Amino acid sequence: MEMVDIERLRSAERRVCAMVDPSELMLCETGKCVVDHVGLLLFSPTLSEGLTALRDHWYAPTPPVPSVVVKRRISERYGLDPRTIDIWITHLPVERARTVEVFLMCGNTSDAVMEAERAEENEAHWAARVTDHAAFAELLETLLRDGRFHYDGSGFNPYERRSSGGTTLCYLRRGENMRLELLCPGDRRVEVADLLSALVGV
Image (cartoon, rainbow, N blue to C red; front, side):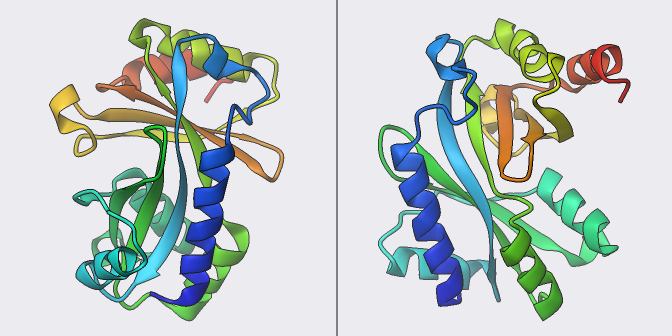
């Protein structure tokens, strides 16, 4: 793993440790969700080399699980066959039950893709995990209703928190620098689709 990615990781760690609620909507003061992690995309020749590099820099990566949503986004962004893309998710615990989520893209990734992703930080985000599961749709509607946030994709990963039925995730964007991921246990894709159809016609 290149030092430029370790430096990006250190920056993400500092952000999540200092974070309160950067959405400025005070979501995490409602008692219905908590700051969970910040995420970013890193690169490594292989999964084992990437995990070793993280451990060598005093991180303790959780057991990796396959990426579903980011793998799809990368393939669509660059017109790549998803069967040729190898992306894994691991979390690096930092403090206060928060983590840095690493999307580890493995293999012979082109220089053009790596340079673009590092410059644009397309997968960088902060995440709020819903603790009141019944409030998931309410929180999503609150974020989208006044137009300050815009829908930026969603999906379901059956590998993440498998014991809780997988994880539904919704990405929302505001401006160039604010990207939020709202997380909820279980497969809520139908609920998300119905809400988006009603609100923004997606």
